[in-house]
Length: 67
Image (cartoon, rainbow, N blue to C red; front, side, top):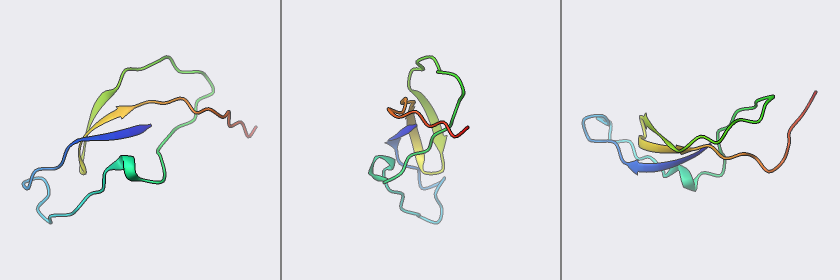
């Protein structure tokens, strides 16, 4: 999953004035494993503490199978 920052959190939702980095600058990604190939899913919105995000599901180029 790739996260794209669309809008930073408002001062009301971030009272401690935390600074959040853009998720595209992270050296790691969040993902999940499935035993089936998932259909293509269009990007969708996610409203996180770090701000408003757009989530893109990207299929890994390498198959991971440990069993």
